[in-house]
Image 1 (cartoon, rainbow, N blue to C red):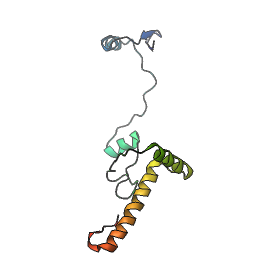
Image 2 (cartoon, rainbow, N blue to C red):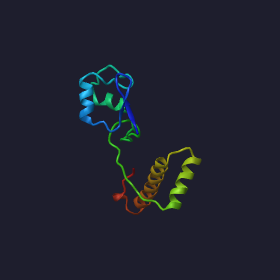
Image 3 (cartoon, rainbow, N blue to C red):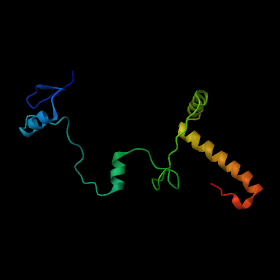
Image 4 (cartoon, rainbow, N blue to C red):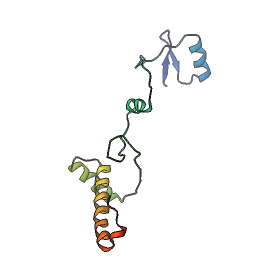
Length: 125
């Protein structure tokens, strides 16, 4: 059973209700776990994003943090997924980076062929 420490050093059972915890807190009988960090004010969304971390957006100029990154999900056969992981590991890349690079190459190559066939309908990436 999980327990929580009270201010007096005792423990509370994990079955303690929110109402019981609120009463104990109001009475000053609970102490914080750890110490609060920080001590500043967040004045912008950019500061909040910097503190929260997460993945950088690919945006318009790749990982500039500007613009939204579209997200696509695909299902892969097991053998393709295994090959992707092996390739990514061997080339010190993430599977996502391999997929992005392969897709860009495929689309650029296909657009080059399309451009030769019909120059008015091809738009390079």
